[in-house]
Structure formats: structure tokens, C-alpha cells
Image (cartoon, rainbow, N blue to C red; front, top):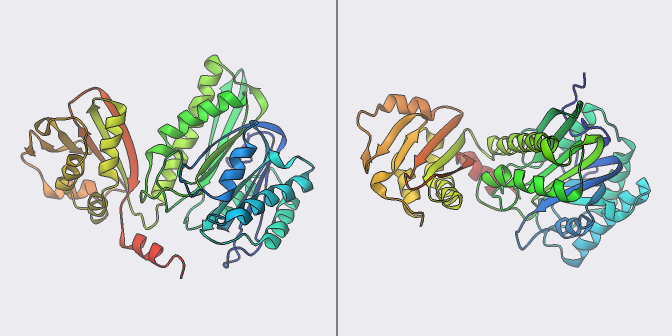
Amino acid sequence: MNTNTTITAPRGFQAGTAACGIKESGDLDVGLVVADTSCAAAGVFTTNRFCGAPIVVGREHLQNGKLRAIVVNSGCSNVATGRRGIADARKTCRIVADILGIHETQVLPASTGMIGKFLPMDKIEDGIREAVASLSDAPQAGQDFARAIMTTDLKIKQACERVKINRTTVTVAGCCKGSGMIAPNMATMLAYITTDAGLNQRRLRALLLAAADKTFNRVTVDECESTSDMVVAMASGMATDTSGGRAESYFAGALQAVCESLSYQIVRDGEGATRVLEVIVKGARSVREAHQAARAIAVSPLVKTAVHGGDPNWGRIIQALGQTEVAYKPDSVVVMLGKTVLFRKGAPAPGLSESKLEKLMDRKHVAITVDLNAGAASDRVLTCDLSRDYVKINADYRT
């Protein structure tokens, strides 16, 4: 039985890492994922207009829908670095390609870390050579890759799903990094997914977009969209063909489960976070309006600080909802904490027990549900509390 649950779990993938000195801590800071053969590949990238050089190059390299390798460095994001930054991203791909004997457009680059610093290319090249020398499909190699891409993350974030398709086990595995500067407008961070399913780039991209929209696009830590966001998937096809029909549906379910797990782990590991806040809005006229309402509540500093303090302050929830342009009648809105009604018919619910509410707020996962009673659509946004530690981490980030 295969017990590997890392990014090297699907057939046809290896990972390698190195500590080349970008991080002053001496931790791993270069990671490679290399496929045995050319893979169908798809990616979704940040819409931030100050996107990093690796985003520019990565979009170009994914145009033909094929990849053999992903190269990531942490500790320097290669953002706002002008023409030199683009040249360095291309050179990074070229170094990998030359060592592996592939074309540089089959390599996707990524960088994460401080904005406005140039890549130390001598260190990068040494790190890439060391990472190639360590390539392996062993679980530890996948674990090390997930660690190498971390910046302010406190925990490694990985997920794996296995599903039987055409009498064959298909594996979908992924890892990601992300803790702060999290606000999706496609994804939220760096996320990499491998699978041994077989399907073409067009279908892989469609399924990745759908999965990302329901998961990565539904989380926020600080509502700051990163300049380096990407979600990239590679399919080796070494297990079985999953194109079309029931097989594709099973694969899509596994892909979404991996994305759901990874996105939840990001929120749980949000900078300074102590609790996950789930905001569910139902009874909206449309999914768009349900999302708008849920997001307004989830990003409210007043709501997030109340959750951190364990304060069941439903007034902050209706305040955040009230500033949206979503259609509803205030007297029809119902607000719930878990299964306990806090607010209905335009007033506090009778008989509220403060001690009971405080216990509900003291959980690691706090769920707020708002029923607008204006339609049949619903949506959900995940976030975390806003703590003193978040301010400290980001106040001291450079110094």
C-alpha cells in the first residue's frame, strides 16, 4: 500500500530541494518538482497588476499546456524588479532546463518572499544543481519541497486524495504555502498539484479553474492580494485516462478535495491566527450577492477582532452586512452562531445565554450563518481571527 501523501505520491513525479542561502535562517529555500515525461499542465495566476517576474514568464510557458518541471525559490519574490527580474526568471528556467536536458519553456518558475529585491542568481544556480542532485520520489522529498517553499508559514501544508477510476487508483496530491498577504482573485499563494490522471490541458485547466473558484477564491486572511499568487497542476497520465464522463467526475471530486484541504490549511495557519471563521450566507438572490455579503462580514476588522476575543458581538456582523448593496429586507435577516439564533425580525433573539455564546466563540472553528431570506442562492467564505500577533509579525517583517 502506498503511504506517500506528498506531492511525489502520484506516479511520474520527483522532488528535490536545497538551502542555497537566500534565507538568512539557512532553511531550505529552493525546491524542484520534476516529471518523468511531458505533462498536461494548467495554472491560475494573480490578477495583481504588480505581479512578479515569475508570473509573467510562467504565463508564457504555460501557453502550450505542457510542463516538465516547476522551480521555486523562497525568501525573495522577484517582484518589482523590472527587466532584470524577467531576465532572472528566464535564466532560472534555463538553468533547470540545461541540467535536465529539456526546453526552458517546459519549466515554470516561482518566487516568494520580500518584494523589491533581486534574485541572487549565483546562489540560485548552486541551489538548483543541488536540488536536481537530490531528486527523489520518496515521501521525504515531497515533504522537503513543501517546507522549501515556506516563508512566514508556521506549518507545512499538504493534501492527498486517492480514487478508483477504471479499476486503477488515481492519486491527486498537492502542497502550498501561504499565511499572510492572502486575498484571492484567482488563488491566494503558491500551490502545486500533481496527479497521475490522464486528461488534456484544456480539461485540466477547466477543472482547476472550477476547483480554485470554490476553494482558494473563498478564503482570505488579510484581504491583501499577493503579487505572486499561483495555482499550478501537472497531470502525468501514468495511471489511467480520466477524460470525460464518470471518470472525469471522480477526478474532479478528488481535485476539489485537495484544493479544499489546502485552502483551509492556509486560513488555519494565517499570520497570528488562533481561530478559523466560516461565514455562510444563504437566501440571497444570486451567488454573486451571497459572496459579496459573506466577504463583507469575513473581512471586517471588527468581526475578526471579536472572534479573536471570543466576543459574540452580532452587532458587528449586521453592521458589515448593512454596508453592502446586497438585496434583502433587514427585518427578514436571521443571524446564527453555530445553530444558535442571535438575531431575527430586526432585533436580538430572545433568551440569549451569554455563557453559551462565549463557549461557542471559544472553539477553534467558529461558524456564522446569515440567512437573507431574499432568494435561494448561497456562498461561503473562510477567514481567521485578527490578533495582536498579526500586527507584530507584519510590523517587524523587514526589520
